[in-house]
Image (cartoon, rainbow, N blue to C red):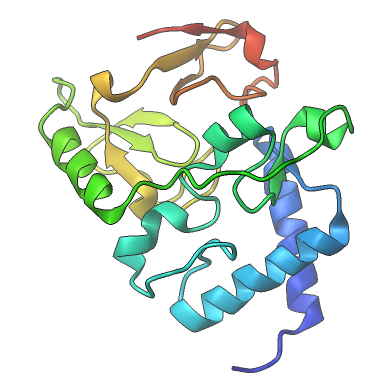
Length: 205
């Protein structure tokens, strides 16, 4: 594999930084550490064809690793609970401001057997309606259409990171200001649409 071009590292770093801010997220303020993670993402992209989390062992099969393509499916839950995602590329507002320090973050990813069971349960419990409801597994964005969008309008992951939404699988949160809906364990730190904080969300379903 060819040596990474630092200009390529800088481009991806700036893109991730821009997309994080637009979506209400924060990159780790330690720029040297964060650039090392960006190098890991680029290395995995070159090696496997997709930017698997640099802190996890990839299978090399995209379909098996969809949940750990950066940003991973577990990012938001880890940020809410621990102040950072598993590899600490993304951090909470408290960590960014220095009000909270980071410790070790346990692996949230289920075993392959557990992931298969969860997928089978979800397939049997979809919402009724004229169009299927799709959920972004990374940020929780919901939309009702025949097929998921090519790119999530909130966190910018690709179409294959969407799943048919099963309403009993997790809570749906509503921003009381702009009405944005998302399905995830906790509301986001910041509404990606109107930028109000998580205490402006209410349980919708």
